[in-house]
Length: 110
Length: 345
Image (cartoon, rainbow over all chains, first blue to last red; front, side, top):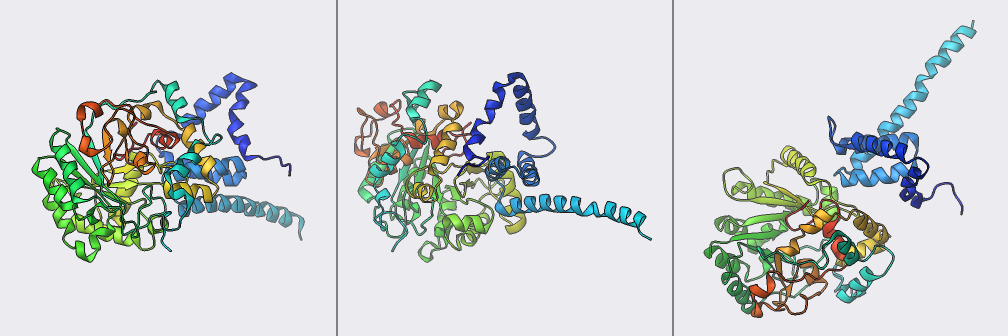
């Protein structure tokens, strides 16, 4: 069945350089620097990336960073907690807008 | 029914079937082509600094990733006659290290004799230990024997948690491994200043590459000390080789193509330069010579012109021999590389 997402498209990511090589190279240099060991370890950054991948619901990122997390020595329990962090923030971000709802309701109500 | 490919009469028990699967086009370019592009074809040995002897396929465990297809039902064992040929060859050289592996090498009846002979020659001896063997009743004095002979213990522990370790090595193995590590620690192994070296081996528990060696070593050190009071010297990361029971796992789980592609894409010329076959000579349980333990399991003999049995051992014709390679060799050249001594690049 035709779908917009194909797992093998992930390997074509570098094709984005064909439209503008300079911007692609700048992005990749930045990307590489972001994920290098720094104040946070590569392993910790990969867990954050996995959480963000769940938040933005990117199947490519979830595929890539599940493998990366395992290859950085993380385990499924840690990765599950990263997904819960994404879930909590997404859920919380919805719920906190309830304050706005309450503000509006309060203003409109007698 | 046993857990080995051989006892299940699985076609993959035959080295020829494994080689055919690995050579089939599709999953990755031929390894030789990749090596040629990197300037390492043909690949030559640089001298032998490790004589690695596989004394047999008998083991008290049946790990799911075992490249030897070892297990309790395997009967191949090195005889005293072949062990004597090995020690005779070893003593005729100045090769500094004897590396004994299996199966569970300690369960070979010639294991202790070989250790004592090599130590009497003043050489370094390594024992590739599965840890649970230390708790078998007839092996009650094994840990003390290893300590007395200052044998370096290279112990398999894929992860610092039980779920992952048991998934690869069998139910209850993590707990036995921790007990084994504590026994070794009590004898001074892994303790600073004791001179008794305890190194751990981490294999990924699945179809992915190992973590960076220094990073995962730090995790192991922290977790094993905190959770179990266990200490060790170094941790080696070893990539799972796509042969034997791990190959079976890759195929049955639908991961074979993806794993081979991952290994090939992660090909690292620096790792290729440092592969262990360049400084190791491997001896099989029957005395046959190989470039490494993986070639041994694939029954890939040494290149034409080199002596092929320990009885014909001739260092001059072995030191700089051409190495036999095939697509499984991607396992040793991916990422930071992999060897019996861990990452190489």
